[in-house]
Length: 387
Ligand SMILES: *Cc1c(COP(=O)(O)O)cnc(C)c1O
Image (cartoon, rainbow, N blue to C red):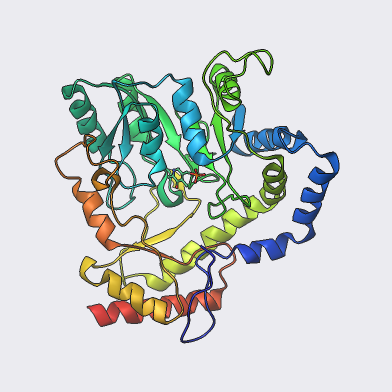
């Protein structure tokens, strides 16, 4: 993520520069940590409740349940919904594994759906096909987990009514897109719940693991608050359901409170960096698209290049001191742990195409214009060499 890279020309460039943000926050982080040490409430201290309130106000959503990771956030919702064997939950194949992993944890069946080549997000037509495949396999489809990949909101205008027609709930995997908006509203209020992650490299990241669920449903929030602490009932030694140890550390909450203060500004900076890439790379390769209702949180800036030269382009950039990443090199539907689960079609053709073409460029709010110009120039040269 922020590892130094070997370089041959110029200074090493970070893929995600967490040190630049740390320098900007300065004493604010140290003070936040010192306050937690002073009160000593490391578990469920006052910062946890304060963060839940602030996140709710930021996203315009009534209930926020913080938790230990983005993965646990997804799991809390599925547990609260009582997801169980025999049920199917539809997920994109082109995503991070946690989206489908939590479905399998509960003994239910993830059914893999293809994505759209331009947005990288769940393709509603493939979703429709996946629901039919699940039913044909004797499974009961109960829910959909669209992913807001790389910071871009999924096609909710199509997915929400489609899910409703089939009687499915929608859980938004917004792990990469907290801060993004859809029809001018921050993500968090769509579907039955939104799960997000505070993993350090996400748009709003802490200094360890963390996550949260946002929901408008008071009863769902109440259930998740119990599940988060071992299915606690009215007191600590009255456990009324099977839960987990899923709390967010007070220290991480304190760090997130400090980071949330500059988050809005960082989102604006991310937008500027993305537009600068758009301008510099116009016509050179396939650039990310942001459909009209959406504003991206720009977790990644991911381009598409010819499959045959993708790895060579990455090598060229690396030797110029420019790190890149391939998210994701293989769809979940063909990975060892997941390939026995159903998919919407015999082959998820767009997923297979994207895994060979995608390349994510260095991206963070503090990417300086001159550094970005170096990246653009090196990429243009590498692309020319391959055409
Ligand atoms: C990061 C991520 C998660 C999991 O978040 P963790 O905090 O790492 O557990 C889930 N889904 C997607 C799409 C992610 O990118």
